[in-house]
Image (cartoon, rainbow, N blue to C red; front, side, top):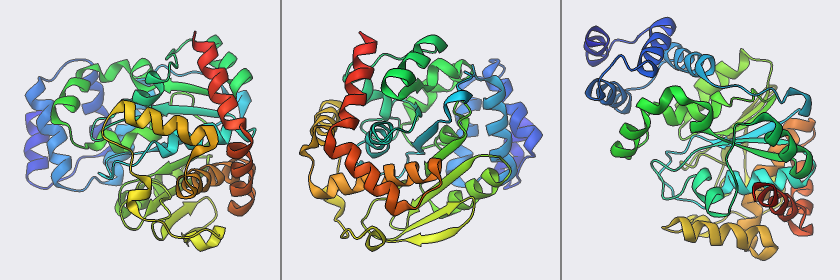
Length: 330
């Protein structure tokens, strides 16, 4: 590790194989906490290369406990986090709206590290059980069309990193990796990333796969379609600048999608929106993201996906998916 750190501190990069080896060694407890913290810190101060990101991804996918849910044709809606915006749990709500629209979702998530409330925090608060038992996950998909893949249950190799990430409390390259290491290897993916550089890297890496994908970054910094302005969207077939007007909805203000300061605030807001009591801005943001997920999976237009998402949310089908998932957790 000393040689790797010296090279990185001298602004050199490491190869895909070296990056993969470092993460495997971290998982095997070969390095001490100071070395791991230093390694993470380097990537807060300089850009990650595509070779490094590929190596880190390959290591985590090789080390994870994978679950074969390929017969469901699922999608994962997942943001990198780390945008510093403290929005409500847009991708998690969008996941239930997508499930309510009839699309199976394998939702990969974790506790918040750099935000007040991550996906797993709010779902745990609502009473959703985390499990890596494949029979339970299949029952969830059959009944609610969504299952939750809580990252620590599937990535035990990262137990040496979790406490360091918590203590640092800021985004690290693990934020960049989260959406790419879903242990169900879903065929479809909608990913939000926190900057344009990462959008480009994700686009390159996903081109190497057989996935249907949509990678998004709002130009004012959000790791989702925020409707606060234009959003860059990269898919298998196109690279476009999306604007709220494309869905015939108005631009909104950042305060319209703020998520509160506590897990309880976030959970109450989550329930209000999924109950159909959200503001127009909140509903539109959720449906814009769910709509792109539906469109990506079913290969339809974003506008059609948006309309499907609206019907799912406003008819109560999204709430039904949540209710069934909570019931299975009892």
